[in-house]
Length: 253
Image 1: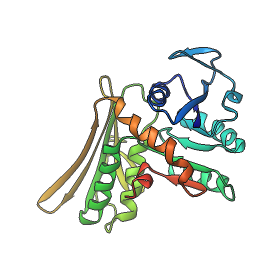
Image 2: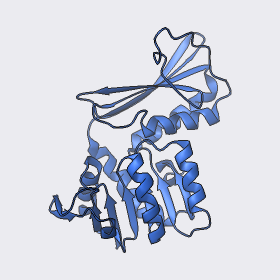
Image 3: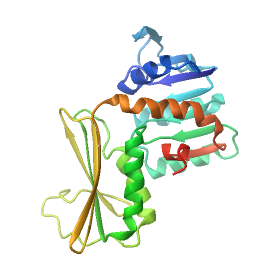
């Protein structure tokens, strides 16, 4: 039985993780941490504002925001637990810092920008297409109160495509209004939309002479993340020590 600690237990993903763990028989909830709260009821469990509530867990899943995760992750690392980071917005620089921090340790850290199988395949398809088109841009849309932009999925997609591309950044003209051509992630333009009614959506648009290709993924229900969360919690212990990025590492793609 794998004891799982949940950091950010009172959020949307924290609650989803609780429900997903309850539905299987090889994982159990070892503790719930809700920063700034104490003895908060979360789906019938008591979430503590004290990080010590996760002591003794085999795996800690970090589901807060990037700034809170920067403070929390060293605690979980020092405890000796394996750490699963599902926090959005983890940049290349943050991941590099994690690799340095985990150097020489026997525990594992798995950073998952998106727990959806469909999103993982979308990123892989985009990576495969990247060398064959002169221009590419990412448009991602999320719910209006998502605190970070661009999303972790967009950052990871851009990083994978940048490594695979044969073409440099294309000439996109001059901005008359600052920001109108989007942000730049490793030479890939990224546009972030935040809307009421949206969940999680991303399209990657490729262009070359006489044609364009769109690769798109839409989340219609957050339940699509549950299988990826469970897979990650089960399999993180089989990874090599140190830092691994992406759910795709568990699929072999």
